[in-house]
Image (tube, rainbow, N blue to C red; front, side, top):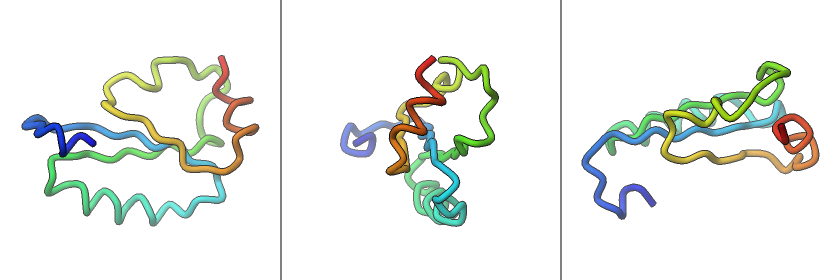
Length: 79
């Protein structure tokens, strides 16, 4: 998506994942993205503070959720 727009600036992508997603997946993804000017950050839902707010999204051009546990994600991030 960001590459198709011809973005010359570095872009930052955030993944929110649940504990059932292997962390190594994101290391590989970050290596693939780096030559294209993309930085990849992953935050695991279980390690987010209980009082997490919209500040979590700041500084990222896109946010993706990597989980099939939708109820768990909603319960934690609805606020």
